[in-house]
Image 1 (cartoon, one colour):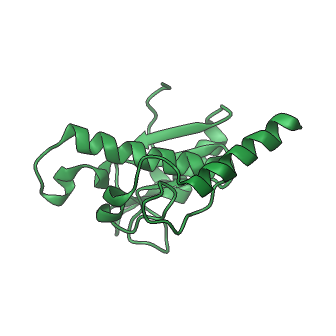
Image 2: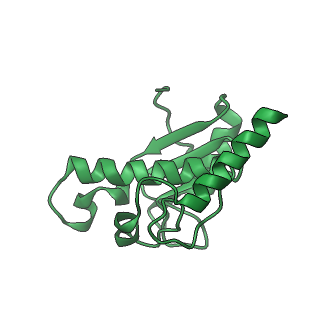
Length: 147
């Protein structure tokens, strides 16, 4: 676990009351060292072409960001559930780490690498890659090791 960092103020969009995920990931790339970094935040994040995102990662790259805000059932006026929040955060973290390592979005809606447009799609996913994505990941790692 790394240090707790303050988000760059320029990432905050006052009119949207959200943080620009691209700005945060770019800032992370410049400010944080490490081969692969997964950052968690409790603020609501977006990319300009979307109302919100659960996370964002460099593809492939070093930096990934996951927001807890919309993964918490409380956001949807549901009762608190630590286990459900943890399950969702795990899925989205694995998803963003998959991008860092070079996996694209998957068409299999139950694969952790499928794109989630809403919380129901997060809940539908398994916490692991499908067989095809796992094979791609193994190929990526095999190629790196053989270099």
